Image (tube, rainbow, N blue to C red; front, side, top):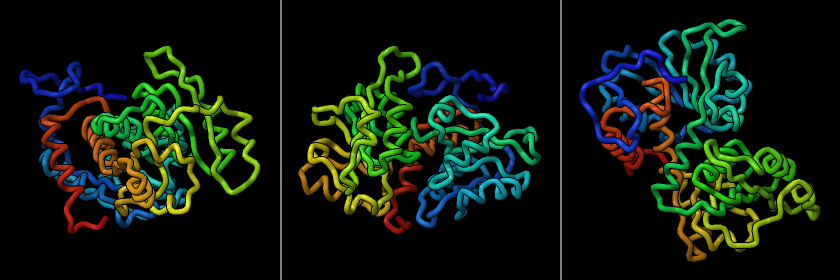
Length: 333
């Protein structure tokens, strides 16, 4: 789903992607509107992060926020004017966005999750504009975990929703041998085990082992056990929590998890309740700010170049600007 009219340039730029052509200056692109959609959305850092990035890129683009429920997404898209270029999506819109997207990138296709919509220049079959769907959560989370120096070999994922799917695939991308899904919803745990156990990361032949642990107060935990691989006996090397900020307050967790470093996708509030529990146990806890920045960079590549694999110019400086925008003490967290 990359742009077919990508231009070549004489100058080269330093970047970790050695085989991708950096994008030329984009100041000629027209004014565009973008936004992050979801609920709750009031404290999202995405508007500040994206606005800073577009200013750095010399783009006169606006990026706002809209409180929206999944049932209203289709009508919201139908009402957008031609100036709308793309959208970021958070809870609870990611599965509905997957259903709406006319075409999807391979990660969105496998995960069933779309967190980025890019407007296409063609009409949708049922009328209105068509949208391309992407999942930047997987790449963003994998990049943040790698930059934090964490080991995903044996990963436990807390939660069973859309972000948990992306966390599982991020761990697989980082070379995980085993992923344990830890959640209260036995049916959702069993579904993730069935979908992803024995799958391989594209380009590799080593199957991922996936099993499940149900942490509800219910005495019957057989729903996941009957459909899961044998649970990993060893302490995990990494725990990824995909729960909303306050959801970890009363969650029952195996003690072994508290001995591994935690990467918590939550960042509001920080430290999260789970991070406090990890720190009290003497273990490290990393906030979701890193994932937020890295997946936003992939979204910006999509909105500018149409392709999350197409690097922009001077991305290291761009990332610095985005991190600065995410961290001011006076901004709502």
